[in-house]
Length: 116
Length: 112
Image 1 (cartoon, rainbow over the protein chains, first blue to last red):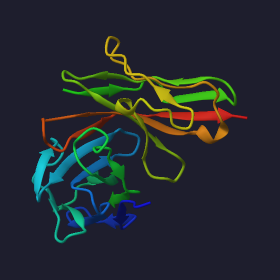
Image 2: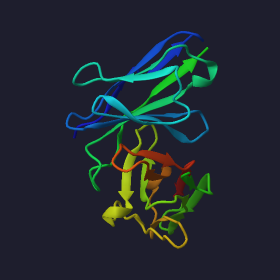
Image 3: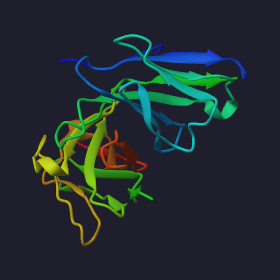
Image 4: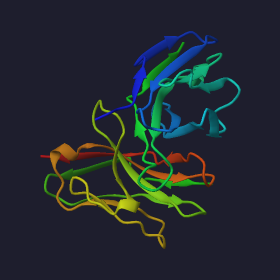
């Protein structure tokens, strides 16, 4: 069964550094998402992406964040200048469509980001 | 604004006992509700969605619009049901990729 994959599984970075988190969505899916979960807190929506543009974004997704689909398979989340509070588990998800029964979001295993 | 509340952080039951994980939501439109499960060291995966009205692994959930609830139930819990359960609501602009709003999760432990 196809799955969403994410790399790396863990990333440690210094405050102020740029990080890029990578995701490979399921191949016939058209909608892509990033979520994050700070330790002990809820899973929070960051951004959704369709047809090579951002569809929706949350208040968390400020100018420090960007997303890109650089080729036919990868979907990336870039944090330009990391802050301590960006430490979290970042989940990528994808869905096939928007119609009922097509919009189920399938999640990747996550990337644990630690900002020192 | 949309919100999902799971009042129980931890829930323990004995094997064979009924289990109910509570979920209440707040949403002004017509919601679509999901239950996701995360077993130890595994990814979030869909357990069931209200629109399918299906039963997965013996779990069911009924959307009660009057009480704005979507409680997850199973008549006889098994040890392998031990996991973190998240209730989630799908909403957003019509026609756009819709974000999921998650509850804080309930850690279910089924004791032998």
